[in-house]
Length: 477
Image 1 (cartoon, rainbow, N blue to C red):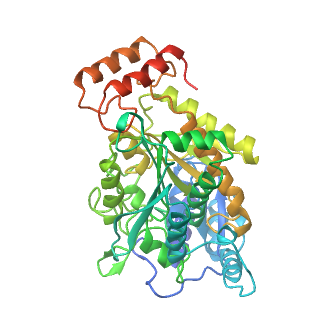
Image 2: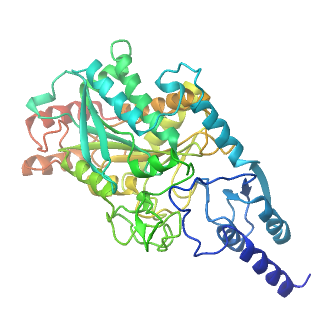
Image 3: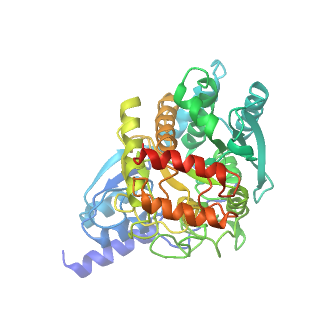
């Protein structure tokens, strides 16, 4: 067939596709959305034209994989659109044959009246997670304090909790250095909620039996925010299981903003987000236009010293470092590489799951993301963990995978925080004279948290003691 005839045929088929028209917009909120016989296909694009074709057909890329030509990517499409791929000669394999069948099985599991389940035996809705946080605070009053970060667009509380041991901060500091774990910026990624809560629960239950966890809770304060996007999450529990964004009303319809494209660092780049509200990666009209990202960032800025952060997502089994919005390596890449690889190795040793560490070279460019903001604004070692699986179930991960995935997250979190080398101020994996110069500069300034190891937002004698210990040992963990 001549090229001109192929173009005409593809254009006609695209016009009839449910996902093809760029102005289709979102499914009406409150109307249950079904995905009968829809597929998830993994393509291996030969060129950028193949990627553009799938973007037009689908509009819903599932996998966090390379967005360019030479890398795999998963898309949800209608069965009737498979001829488009065949006609264009796009190489693909079917990863999920019937998306609705997975959702129906998940709903049957959730609605089974004869199942007596513990918290981690099933996915939990907003109210259940909130109640569980209250249970933890009641059961561990010396360790857990519930917090409120603000409210969502629909006035739902964005809640979280502070978790640390009763061991007091060093040097009279009001708080220990803070590690921030958030999840569910993307509403359909239910496993992130459960993993975040599982990590916290294991920290508490193993405090007296696990010397590593005890040391971490004695040294740091952990802040957990399990549901960063409560409105979107509520929507996924009420008929729109695959909703991704928040519920921002745009031009009279709920189209939503992708919260993980709404942060200020790298915001606005079309190479890693979209300016159209119909896109799943719509970045919003301005950085922090959404109350959800405002709440999380304002809380992070209120912390005297933030040292590390994890943003839990799914799926693809990846550990991702900044920068996500550009291919340029971040300052302190040596420290990121050491810690990221240790997380991957810890997960493999602990659960047998295979994760991969890297940056946009193993993902795609994404601008305006939380980890870039945490690192770029606070200096915290900030990473994304893309949880299970690798495409067999995608966002509809069976409940049997909740605890195994939780153990992935636990192993990764412990490796991250255990690997922090706070005296390595230039993050080259050695505590040497170059770090001494940086510490002395901060110490002379005093009223700075540039070399604050105790969490009091100052660089003082208490910090000098900690730095001196690291300087004597020279090497990082």
